[in-house]
Image (cartoon, rainbow, N blue to C red; front, top):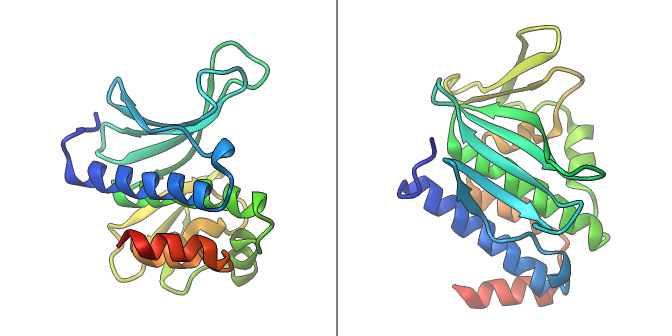
Length: 191
């Protein structure tokens, strides 16, 4: 169960809120994700809730003290369907995955170059190892600290393996590449 008083939860929410502001700076306020919520010990990051066809992500802590990221959607249904995206050893990395996803959506909407395509072309980050652990799943781990990992679908190389060695700030720098000065200047004025 995720503790709302945990400093890592506070950090993740602050980083998420920053990206919600970036949507506004980029002139895309109407498509900005909703405020995060904590329900039944799970963190919800929705877009369009409670309207029909809302989507989002959920982070929940597992019994193994890992952090499972689920994609939720009500598209063409009354009750949300949840699908596992990955399981992370640290909340920090699960949070970076959520930020990567919402920033990638904004980049697409803003017609910026694709970080996903760039990372897919680069393949596996040299600081990360990939080990197939079952027919459907692989474990991506930091070479310098194998206790830092995520488990995801084994097909191909998951481009978000590149988030594992990055800090929040380093990830933001990558995700902010190519944004116009009107966005980066407003962000700089927040400091």
